Amino acid sequence: MPRLNLVSLTSEELQTLLGEAAAQRLLPDISSARLAGKPYLGDEVRGELQFEALEERDWGATPEQSRRLRTLDNALLGAGATPLGVYYTPGVIGARHQRAYLLEPDIALALRWSETPEGAPLTPFLQAVTLTRDRASGIAASLSSTDGRTFSPTPSEELDVRLIPNAEDLAEFLAAHRALAIRHGKGQKLSSEADWQRAFQTVRLLNYNAWYRRGLLVASK
Image (cartoon, rainbow, N blue to C red; front, side, top):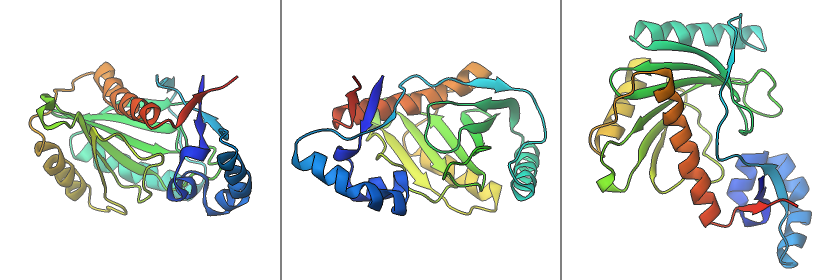
């Protein structure tokens, strides 16, 4: 399976991906590999996401996180979102737990967090994805997130990504996402659990292909 070549990342991408302390600690080794023309391999990167369905329970690694998850879940249900269950997604960096929703007619929503943070933020955040019906604009999907951190590695040029950090008003967040998506035409209708998975898989595959084009992924031996 391909691994991320840290040599090919910018310093900003490294700090976002690893955290400032870890990036500084690895910088001498990464610089030596760059001078030698060799890769410095990081985590494995999957092109195909796996969505492992989990049984319901009182989620959250901390009481504060649990309260936040309940608050956001209630807000989404109140906004008319259709719940699809909770999934664990191995092979992604950061928040691997996500509660899935669809919002008519074309928005796939994920309430994301991590039960085993390993440096990932404990604060749950929302992501919204709309797949463009006609890609004439060059944009295949729109993605909005309340996580204030920039994506690392940099997302595909076929994704229109907007960060809306600390969005407390769900209606405002959803309106901002709809405004982002409509710039590229009508969205594809999403009406099933398979559609929800397809939306987030599309985002992953667009990024995966873009990272290959940049030379960020190398085959591990």
